[in-house]
Structure formats: structure tokens, C-alpha cells
Amino acid sequence: MSMRPIPFDNSYARLPGKFHVFQDPQPVAAPELLVINLGLADELGIDPDWIRSEAAVRTFAGNELPEGAEPLAQAYAGHQFGGWVPQLGDGRAVLLGEVIDRTGQRRDIQLKGAGRTPWSRGGDGRAWLGPVLREYLVSEAMHALGIPTTRALAAVATGETVQREQAYPGAVLTRVAASHLRVGTFQYFAARGDHEAIRTLVDHAIKRHYAQAETALDLLNAVVARQAELIAGWMSVGFIHGVMNTDNMAISGETIDYGPCAFMDAYNPETVFSSIDRMGRYAWRNQPEIAVWNLAQFATCLLPLMGERDKAIEQATEAVHRFPTHYARAWLERFARKLGIERPREGDAQLVEAFLKGLADTGADFTNSFRDLASRDVPENLSGWKVDWLARLADEVDWEERIRRANPAYIARNHRVEAMIQAAVTGDLSLFRELSDILDTPFNDHPGKEGYRAPPAPGEEVLQTFCGT
Ligand code: AMP
Ligand code: MG
Image 1: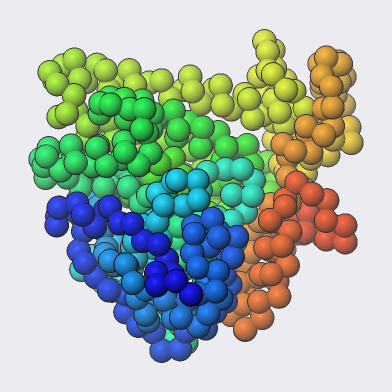
Image 2: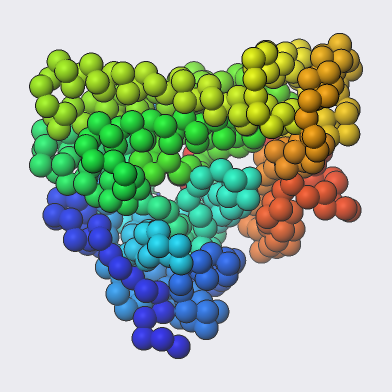
């Protein structure tokens, strides 16, 4: 066993004091391992003996600090459902530190549900088993789908109870992220008129995520492009984030903060799951526009670094307005591939739109309708469309395989996730393991597991997901 089981190399902790509060995680009563991601641990260069030890379980519970950890809570602000909140910050998350992974990328290792911090406000600083396993499962599923996301390294039970609508078993999630810099991190300092801090953040973000960028405007352009790619990825798998507040949008372009997120079953662009999203602000179809709204907030934060005001506003506006172009290209690439088309051309966008309209008209299952194209099966109302589609595919080779690689057979269907959580609360992790195993390779057929492909039967639908995390 090496001296340093986790090869920490911390940079955020070196930023000035106003960026964070040094805060140790609060120990829990009885740490017990629920799940550990050995593949990810290896990628991060964590000691393979240590990761299998009780010391690792104690660490991921917050009961022990490995050498080199410098636990801290980060400062940020944010717009929540459009309303400005000048101070949020990590209220129940503690960054242990950073590592340089095997590919040379700097990654954050953070405990979520690690106890109160100065930013907890009225909260208990804790998380319960349900949302912890949901985030673990769904974030890893997104990764397997090829969509940029934070990762899950471990989940441990705390042996303590967390009070929500009722008492639940407590848990801690170990999250790995390219960074936890959010739009809201920039907003926190912009709202305080602290241009020096924004300069520091811009430099930090460029170094970590966009080495080719030199100026604040370069950074903005890069973040806009990355977010357009990300949202197109979400749309292509029917993912609904659920809480696209500016504090939940990462500068790195990773999906972050899995709260009331869910995948759509029947295709309906208005789909929204989150119980707190009464106006449907974060419905599936609104996600690109909300991203633009959030990016406009980000751009506003950068203006003081962009020189003469009128010129800066013009350039920042132009940058944000490039989102639709990036997005349209990324969207068409993804959706054309879902139809079996390698390189989209004129007319393909209409072909995709016509297919989606056919699904919307009958409320056909989003995921399965695309997957079934590999065997040339289309919903009945799309038989006319099928003629055009097959004519288009005459120019493509190996399109069946392309469809199978672009369209998952399995997604983390909400009713399955809920059933998994209900079982886990009783101490039964078998559904978690079974689901994890399938969602690890979602493009494979998994003979015998076809039941997991089925949309919820009437009465099985989970219409709402809760933020009571
Ligand atoms: P979220 O909805 O998870 O993005 O969280 C929004 C804000 O509320 C963040 O500042 C969190 O740190 C904080 N927060 C959420 N849950 C808790 C909790 N149980 N205790 C303390 N702070 C929390
Ligand atoms: Mg959040």
C-alpha cells in the first residue's frame, strides 16, 4: 500500500479564501459500503488495495481523511427557477481534493451528503439512500451512453436516519467531476463586483477545461459550444435534467446534479417529471432555450473582463447567439445517426422531425421506437414515412449496426429506478446491481432482461420525481 492511497494534487484549495471554506466532512455512525466503482478508481490512479479496504469505506463516509485531502465547501450563487439567489454554496458537499487521472485530466473527488457546512442554511447537510443510488445509477448510465457527466465512485450507507417526508436511511455519494465550477460560481463574484475573483476563475477554468482559450471571450465561446453538444446529447436519449438552475450548470460541459432527473418513456416534448417544476420550465423541449438563458447569465459575468462595455456586450451576445448553430449541428448529427445516417445532408432534419412528429401523435415509446428501426420496425402511423426513410438509407452502408450503436436498448426508466430505490430502502440491493449491470452496456441486447426495455404499464408510471434529496 502506498503512502498516499489517493494521489491528491489540489488546485482549488490554493485559490484565495473567498472561494471556499475549509470544512471537514462530519463522521457518521456506522459506515457500510453499498457500491464501489473499481474501474473509475483505477482511472483515477487510486491504490487498488486501498480502494478495497475498510479505510476506503471510512473515507467515503467522511470518517477518515486520507493523506493529501484538503476538504472544503465551495462558494457559489445561482438562479433557481429564474429567481436570483446571491448565496448558495455547497450546503452538504465537501470537496476532498483533486487528482490527475491516467489521461492527464484533473478531476475533483467530492463527498455529497457529508454533513453541514457554513452554506447549509436550514438544511441538515445530509442525503438519503434514494437520491444517492439514483445519482450513482443514472450518472453512470449517462456515461455509458456516451454523454459527458460527473461520475460516481462510491456510495456508502451512514447507519443514520435522515428526516425528509419521512425517516430514510442516510447515505453519502462520492462524486467525481472534471470540476465543480458552475455558472453560479462566476455569478457569486459578479454579483459582488469582484472582478479580480472573476479573472482568477476564468484563468482557473481555462487551465482546467479549455487550454486553447486565452481570453474571457474565448472561454465563453468554448463553454457555449460544449453546452450545445451536451444538451443535444440529453435530447437524443430523452433525458430531462429537471433542475437546470445556473448553479447546476457546469463550466466543463458535464451533466451535473442529478436530482429529479428522468428519462422520457412515451414521446411527448412537454414531458416534465420534477414535482417542484410546476410551470414546466425545465420540460424536455425547453432544455436548449434554458441553456441559452443560463449561458447569457454566464456571459454577463464575464463582461467586466472583456474591455470596452458596448463592444463587450456585442461580442458576448454574438457568442451566446452561436448556441443555436452549434446545437442544430450537434442535434442533427445525433438524430441522423439514430436513423442510421452517417453524414447528414439536406432534407435529413425534416426526416427526423417527421419521425418525431409520428411518435408524438401516438405517444409511442421514444427509446424503443428508435431502437426498433434497426429491424425496420416502425409504429403503424409511420408506414408512409418508412418508404422515404428506406429510400434515404439506400445510400448508407451498415446502417442497422449504426442504429444499434446510436440507440440504446436500455435506459434508466423511472419506474425501474423507483422500484430499485424501494428495494434498497429495505436493504435489498439486488435490483440496483441488476440495473447497473444492464445500463453499463446499454447498446447490448442482454438476453433474458428484455423486461427492462418495456415502458411502464398503466399504473406503473412514475409521474413525478422529488427534489427532497
Ligand atoms: P440542489 O437542489 O441539490 O442543486 O441544491 C441547491 C442548494 O441547496 C445547494 O446550495 C445545496 O448545497 C443546498 N442543499 C440541498 N440539500 C441540502 C441539505 N440537505 N442540507 C444542506 N444544504 C442542502
Ligand atoms: Mg446543485
